[in-house]
Length: 149
Image (cartoon, rainbow, N blue to C red):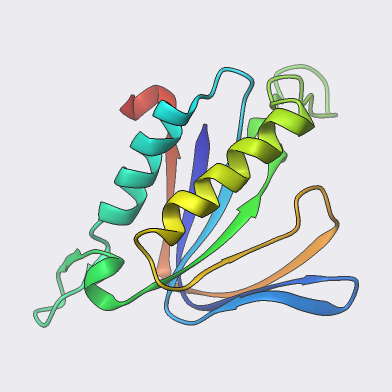
């Protein structure tokens, strides 16, 4: 499982010209799921995501978590995080999870995040989405379950 986390001042997702998810200060998280991922792995990734201290405290140090700043989440499914670009110029996506399993895992992640974060918005699985954001920092971090689990 891979989470690409961007600390944002605001972000939104649009499908067919309609805004379907919008947040203020918080994390825009692109989520890639493989066939090897489980709920146990998702739980560890969510724990790391929500506990990540990358918001500035009163001294300007990155010491505060999403919860401590009343941050919001925008969760976007993105199978392209599993792009394999080793051969040729056209990426392969065979390492990405099959759509049905990946969607179930994505929905599980959303539901678990909603238990801890009051505002959790989401994209539309498999849709052509347009993402708008103002990256704060910029601050972007890649979490890979192979590195933390």
